[in-house]
Structure formats: structure tokens, C-alpha cells
Image (tube, rainbow, N blue to C red; front, side, top):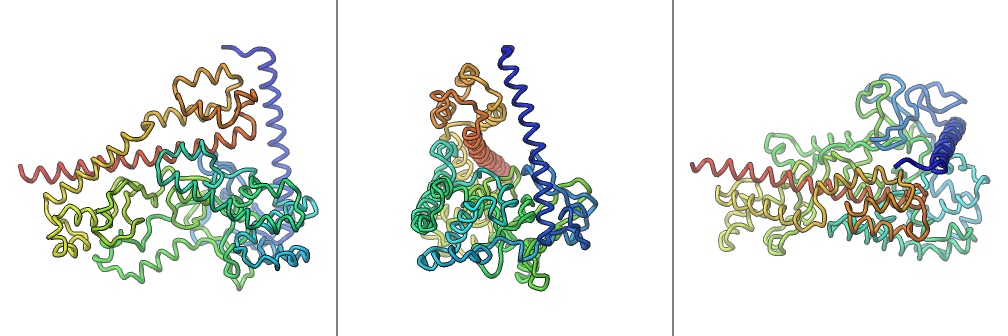
Length: 498
């Protein structure tokens, strides 16, 4: 169907408006980088007063890898210094409390946590507008975040998995409790009404959760202008967990593993000698490649909770399946160690627990030490365990409202949804996606308001919906890979009897 003249004109106007916004953003970014250079932020041993970047790094856009980030403007060698942000440029509770009024009012609220204090200080600074010395930085913060605490009921249910829905609800409840605790202080500070709302608190929580870096003198961390433009790279599998039994048996010392683990996670830290936050290259980079930073080891659900994004191939992903209570009671493994890896393999602890559970109760005491050392107990026991896991994964997949194929189609649809201009186009999509699409319309009130999916409010919800669908799709793919893995093991063991 061809668009009408007015529709075509509207789209052309939107395109011109978007180009104007992009040009304005570029100009604003240049001003921000110049402002940061004035504070001593630099990627060069010979700092420039014009911009803090250009010697090693440059701001670039990576649509499929985190959005705006930092790119190498030359070939970079692993371990090379990338960026220094002086202590005086860091936004911390200490630096914000130089405001006497804020410092005085805060003394009457000693029960607030360090993160609550930083959140209040941050909102107070935001309320100053252009009067804030950090205004050029504050202007460049995202207007929304996809952290779990920002998920509404629609997005929470879109996760489909009970423990993920529970995690989102827990994050929301925690944020609401902390906001109510901090509200009296914010009222005493006479913050403008828009900064007193729960919506503002969630936004500030998202900023602090996703952008703060560790500093030794404040557990709430610091906001680091320019330094928080680095996007995330997973540091690899945890070297100090239950999965290291093979390495330990091969002669690796645990102290060596701890040292390797520490080094791999340390590509940015505050250095007292330099009085600055210093960043280093975690690997070699070619000119034009995105330069990444490892924040630590996180599952995709944890990345959603704290940072508002997830990774398609996350080596630290953990998928949990429903386990009968007697499985947990028959072993001493921690609950969070009983999971399936991103590659579909059951964790060491899950295999050990199931090997014990699949053994008759009267024999468990005598074989427990073998199971806990990672040994197969018998061929029949191993087949029984693998069969149980495969059936449990299959049953979990069958119980979910949508399939992998459905979710792949839905993700493609979500990418196009903002191109829809009217209810007629939305309606055409409804038969394909049924209740979930109807729930979206209800959650956004778009039908009633005749609002476009391109509106800011709708776009934020759709972005969170996409994250939820993407998370559950990865979850399902891991279960399918686990079924394949277990089937291969069963076939291999069974063939030995032929």
C-alpha cells in the first residue's frame, strides 16, 4: 500500500528532523569532549585543549554491538594506556557533597545506603540544570535504561521464565523501597517535582547502576566522564569456580588461577600514583575496531539487571531449569551452581548432584565422594542422568508460550514496528503475534491515544520488550543445545553395549 501525500510528507519531515538532531548531537559531543579536555581527561601523553580524544580513541557508533562506543583511531597493542580521567573529573558522592546545603541536609539521614546517597546527590545535581559544573556531561546521559527495575508488567511477563520474572520484580521492589526511603530528603532539598518522581529515581538508578566504576574510597562508585563510553566485553569463563576441576587436576595451582583471573578483569582502575582513573587495552585492536572494557563476569540476566543490555554469545551465561526439591536436598552444592552453560553443557555441580540423586538412597553415602570429584559412577547412572536432563529441558521448552521460531519472527517484527504509521498496519500484525501484540497495545495505550510507535515513550517500552524476547530466546537456545549434548552422550554410551 502506497503512503498518501500527507504520510509521505510526514516521513520526509521526520527524516529531516532526524538529520538535524544528529547534526546537533555531533556538535554537542564535540563541546563535551572539549569540556572534558579542560578537566584533564585525555587519551594522549600530550593532552590537547581542543578534545580529550583523537590520539588513541574516537567516538563511533556500533549499531550491532552496544551503540555509541569508543573506536581505535590507530592500531593499539595489548596493555597500552588508553585513557586517563583525573580524580577531579570524577563525579562522586564526595565531590557532589561540596555543596553545603546538600551536605547539611544529608547529615539528618544517616540510614541511607551509599548508593541511595549518590542517587540523591545525582538528582540534586541534575536539578541545577546549566548551573551544574557537570552540565555538559549530564546532557549526554541516555534518557532511558533497559535495566530490570525499569521493566513494566508487560516486559516482565515477556521474559516468560519464572526466575527471570522474579528477578525483575525484586529489582523493581528494591528500587521502590529505596525511593520511598530517600523521598523525605529529596523534599527537604526542594527538588523540582519532576525529580521527585519514581520515574526519575529509576532513571537515576539506571545511570548509577550501569555507568559507575569502582573506586576504593566509596562503595557507591563514581561516574567517569568519557571513561563510561567504553562498551562491555565479557571476560570469559570464571577461572575460580566449580568448572576448574580439570585444570586443578592437570596441575594448575589455585593461586595461579586467581592471579590470571584478576589480571583479566583489570583493564580499568583508579591509580593513586596517577591520581586518575586509568584504562588499558585488554587486547590488540586494529584501527576502526571497537575498544571494549570488561566490567566483570555476568550472566545475561545480571547484565539486564545492572546494565540494561545482554550478549548473544556470553561465555558466562547460566541457564537454570526447574529441579525437584529432593535433588537439592541430596547434595550440598549451592543453588546457583546448578545450571547449564551457554554451550549447552550441564555445570560440574549439576552433574555431580544428579549423579548422587540418581543413585539409590542407601548407596549415596558411599559414592558421594566419587560424584563430587567429577567421576562417572556407572554407565547406567550416566545415561539416566542425561536422559533426565534432556527430558526436563524438553518439558521446559514445551511449557513456554512461544517457540524459538516464534521468538525469531517476533524479534524481526520488533525491529520494523516503529515504521508502522497507523492502526491498520498494526492490526495486520496482530494475527501473527496474537496476545503478546495485543498486550503491547494495551501497555502503551497506543490504540486510545492514536500514538505512533516512534514516540519516545513507546520506543522505550519496545526496546525493553525486545530485550525480554531476546533474553528468553537465548534461554531456549541453550536448552536445545543441552538436549543435543545429552542425546550425543546417551548415544555414545549406549553404543558401547552393542
